[in-house]
Image (cartoon, rainbow, N blue to C red):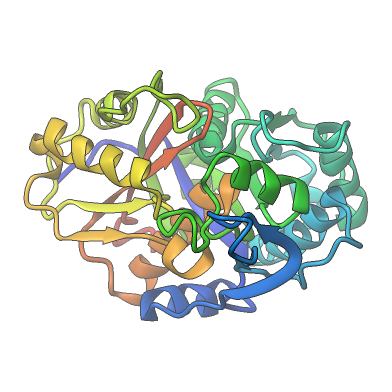
Length: 359
């Protein structure tokens, strides 16, 4: 068993999802395989034969009612604020204590069709509406799915620079008509024409971290331990014509797990969204990283319940893992969170169970 100190500890989580009003409910729903997929008239997917077939109503997994009346920045704020409030309460932080915590906001990937100024507007308005002000560094990550790993790297670096607390807030919605059209034009939107496409979803997750020394001194209740993180690039992206062989994700996993002893059985929580590309990537990863993943039986896919939640995926995975530790249904003492962005970024975060004295 690995007794080395963690890089950071998770002390609070909050989520907003389509299958629960709070984190415990959402994770219970995902564990049970529940989903709230529905059709929406705000976008019609193109038919394979437009002259003979009618377009499809898009299948989506909404938290908020799909509507053209809510601009994307406002939609992201309505998703993010409840998750942040739940996370602060779960961690037991006071509002003035939040002021000295770093804040890393993970937003939709920059290559998607997005309103101008969203990277500045959302974090500023988020803090204003939440009634918080942070004197510590605030950063915005525009990397999409693997933004969780990038943000966790920033948290660990900030602890090395003397900061003791940080928040990673992840939020995304693929339910605006522009994004669904962008997906449809690339044959990625699930419909009769593309049965292996993705279901657009939306979610938010707040992950509150403390440095190990701060958590020990304050007696904080530790939900999970960050044991490793790795980030890499994949040149054969889902947006290219190249064949993906899992090279980028394999490298991210190697970096995240280097120096860690093996833990059996292996446990994976992946942002795989049902697309053939992502299934092939996972298959190659399992072959390339057989030493780490050999004998894998437990692979959890939040998208089965939530659809593809983009930049929020890694935070939702972390929340589910923390709940599994707390509720006693975790299949292992260590989980690998696998995330793959459309633009080629790959991230892996290794999350371990809290020590008996920390829980």
